[in-house]
Structures are given as structure tokens and as C-alpha cells.
Image (tube, rainbow, N blue to C red; front, side, top):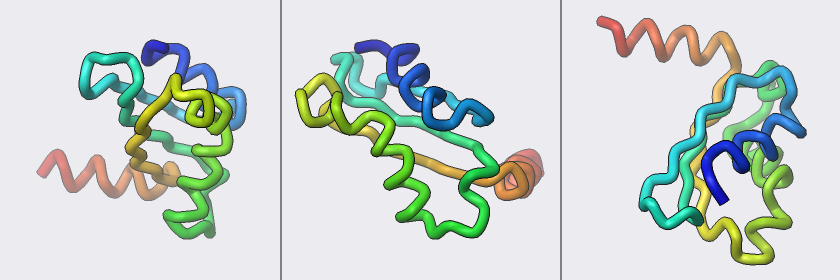
Length: 87
């Protein structure tokens, strides 16, 4: 798999989202993703991550994805985090 494959899978579940995916080992099975979506509003981080993992679970089960590290944000959380980074 490559980063665009993983991104497409996440976007199927979160079509409104901003999604960035990186292959952090270069092996094509260890990824990290940042997902910004309104669907995360009011959810705990664990629930947010569970929703994202559901979108790729078949690929985790068959071994095509060995690891997926996540950072999830609502748009408001992302705006606040972006402002803090710029300071």
C-alpha cells in the first residue's frame, strides 16, 4: 500500500475531512495520519481513533497495514493547534 491508498480509504469514511498520510518507515505498511473532521466534534480521542481505524480495519486484518498512528482534530482544534505552532 502507499499513502494515497490509505488516504483514499479514510476519505471514504470521512469525505469532508482533511487527511494527510505519511509512510514513516518506508516499508509500505507503517503509516501515520492526520485527520481533521467535523465528525469528531464531541467525541473523545479514543472514539475519534476508533472511527478512523474502522475505515482501514480490513487492511489491518490482512496485514497490508501493520501500524497506523493517528492525530485527529475537529476543525476548531486544528485551528487552535495551528496558531500555537506559528507562535
